[in-house]
Amino acid sequence: MKLNIGSMVYDLKLVPEIPIESDQENVVITAGYYMPFDEQIQVSLQFPHQIRKVTLWHEVVHAMLDELGLNGLMTDEGFVDALAKQIYGFLEKNDIQKLYDYLGDKNGKTVKTKAKAK
Ligand SMILES: [Zn+2]
Image (tube, rainbow, N blue to C red; front, top):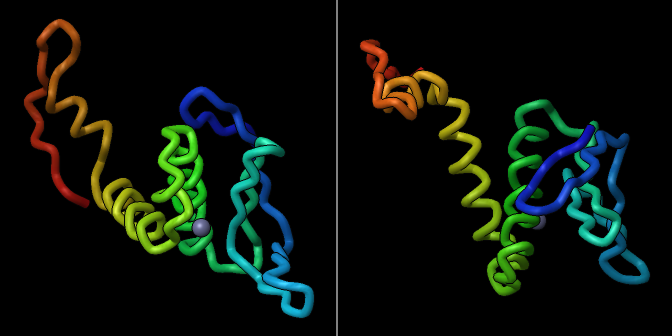
């Protein structure tokens, strides 16, 4: 599946597992992987769906920070994970279309419904 992030188009791939070689002897299994030079984001099927969704955001945040040239933040796993969880939580708990409708269209027309948190 194609995924647009900033100026780039990535392939989002759901894969059986993602083994990452941390050194010559140790292999770590991870939930997701951002591969900028392959223009690809992988998410592992090994994890439950909620973790897969948070992982998607984690990898998207990596890609966004990479595109912004913020390499220090892009490689800061704690920052990336915290921001990804905030974005995921916001999108899961709010009805984005109702929020946009509440703000009105380009002609200044607003919908008379109140945006509610889910
Ligand atoms: Zn990461």
